[in-house]
Image 1: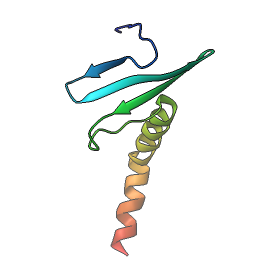
Image 2: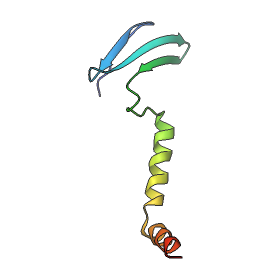
Image 3: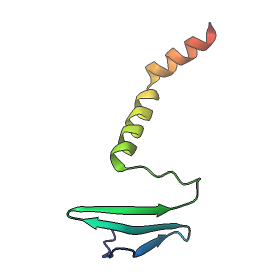
Length: 73
């Protein structure tokens, strides 16, 4: 992991097309502004983990068989 120190209104650039700017620091919270192409999905980690868990659940063989059977009707 790369750890960087930034102050309010300072930014970092990722992969030439993603810019993350510190917009506000208040107590123990930091507000970030993210500029990225619309094709780049951006999620809070807890939401990303939920999405991944839901995708894994949906990909289970039992569910796949239920979906296949639903289309046979």
